[in-house]
Image 1: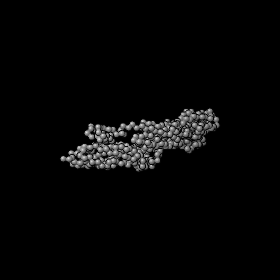
Image 2 (image 1 turned 30 degrees about the vertical axis):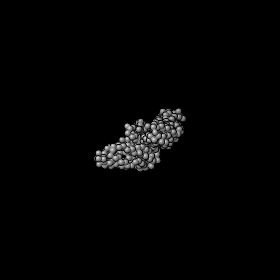
Image 3 (image 1 turned 135 degrees about the vertical axis):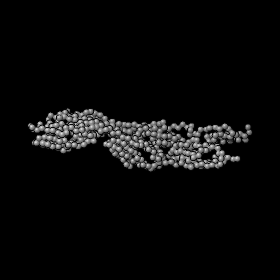
Image 4 (image 1 turned 180 degrees about the vertical axis):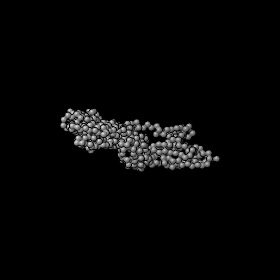
Length: 474
């Protein structure tokens, strides 16, 4: 082979190799389909973050994502108390996250997944603090019981310690919030005091001594003799009928029943009793000794509080936006709404009881896509927001001749945002890449033109792409 011929062949081969990936063939050879580099690259992603548990009060953190520059990736939270500022990215990057306060006294664990890599996030337990209500109780001499309510973070253990042999509680230990029954044995002597310690919180107990017997010839009657009270609580009168000159007293044997008026009298009179709200699910029974007669109060338990919200998900676009959420619950059930991110605020309905509404204010998004999970009436509400997206397409114009033809358009976008493309005509079809995230490309197939010259404007990532086609030559 001559030197001149070898140079020509070498030039042709170099041109063919340079065209691979963008041309279907070279010269008169058969068509060759060559995959684009992004379709054959296997992207490896690694993620690193802090190994220290997040504080119980909540906070934020950042995960570092290591990936090749051309590799796109997605992130997701696997716990409702962890929200992400962004869920998509490309190449090396970071994922910022926010953590809601931990309401429980135990360490909790969640995770963030980036592609197939999972990073565990731990959060320290809430401090175990205990409150007992009521903190003081007065009981009658005959021996009685009172209900105590313990407030504590979930998972926090507590025990009951009695400092007096005549005073006990059931149960004697547990975890988290609970109700227990305080029991006193009958008091045969004068008024006495005692105390219990529950999780370090003290309850003072005072028990009256036995009442003096009524004077000879005195008889007493109450009307009514018992009362069925609603869980919401109420006040009501009890009529005392007695002979003139016959003294009497009224004393409650239950901490949730109080003598509002008429604690003592002579002859006929009236006692007014007050019944506290019963927030627990169980019914309860208490007594009041009126003129030596045991008056019984039976109170229904509150229905268990259940909550639902509607909707449970919202896409706020790029914002700003306002979102209204409906809360459904029972009449006396309290609820609240809170956001853990700065770009979402609760503008109305931060707390309420029963049915209500919450309004969220979502700020405009100057960056990439982001998502967060809010707690509304204890229910997770997921809010996502699209990123600000600026797109550049190349080329912006193409002349397909008489066709058929195939054209590739490159797309570059900011913030790895999502984009779509569409064609308004049947003779120009998007065959590849109609919807994507981040930088990419699409292909348009143009049919052969059998008529007059024609033009169409396609929309690619929000940008105008003008396509023209000549009439066939005759």
